[in-house]
Image 1 (cartoon, protein in one colour):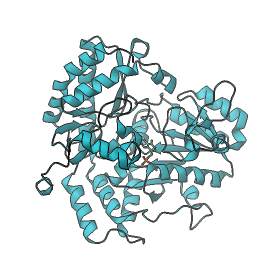
Image 2 (spheres, protein in one colour):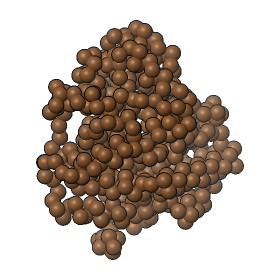
Image 3 (cartoon, helix red, strand yellow):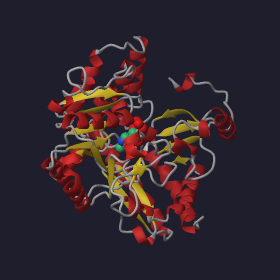
Image 4 (cartoon, protein in one colour):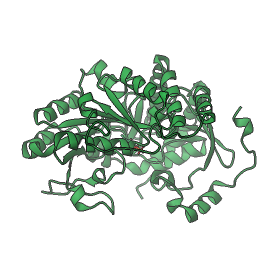
Length: 448
Ligand code: PLP
């Protein structure tokens, strides 16, 4: 039992640990959202996680709706995954050589997602999208990239780009340190706006290498694609000799066995992206990500082709063991449970907000969901401008009321909520109990 072997002595209060961390680490965190800047207060320093629960350094347990930002679809520390990882670790941590399990993971992905004919493993989603873009440029011999406002694809230079105002066609740096010349190779368009895509191709069609798109947007809160959008995007890009990179880092193996591609195949008609990127669930909580797609494109990667890409820890055996065990365990029953838990929790939140008169909409893409607040957005939003119109200031008091009651939500209104197959009646019951007070806090919130 892993819990029994954990140290029982408290490592300190969350506040003490945060103070110490801030001295040693910029902002006290290794990824910005963890610092609670958009909700205020003290981040919780976690020491263990099991099933639907996480435990902080003060020994307090929370029902978790972050799930490691997505990977933990089976619940935290699933025994099948822990056993696979432990077994792999005993055999050696890193070989820098091929292993049988890497091929098994690639085959599992290729069986689930038909457009993936070949797969290359990397360690993070950022690497996956960065490499997919280089590959698309190498394959097409073109430089320009189209992305959508509010979509997140990791933190490589060309993807930290923001739409310029007014007449500026090409993007501006979205972070200090991004060269303007690199941002200017990216065109940032409003999401779900096919006219904008048509106009971009009309103006620059022969220079566009690829369109990169979240398969369903979930990094500005959840904003699903309008029916037919992904398919039309593929058709438009192909008409101009460009590729489509469907970023399934967040949605892949979470919203269905075959990710968002699988959801749309069932409901909205099939579309075939040229390249797809994966992360999160594919590593089951360990650093695995991947890019895959058409074999003739994938064959352009080194060592067969001229597009360079590599990694000391790519296909790491311990990480791959977690991914294989997670995908093997994620069967139809797991996805049915995720869908049911998401439906129950999102309607309970919606009912609680409605009972307190808080205008809102549930934004949903499969089992991913989030909320937008305010009369102006109560019929839902379809793009980043819509998300920004909401009364986002209602979220911080809601978040803190839930946290005080032992429920850990994503610490930003711009993030999706993640359920796991371990969210049982007891865990969901705790969430439901906490909601009335949180909804009252959202109702009485005032803009800062
Ligand atoms: N793409 C999408 C859609 C993501 O949600 C993320 C991370 O949240 C990334 C890419 C980047 O992945 P990573 O954080 O592993 O670099």
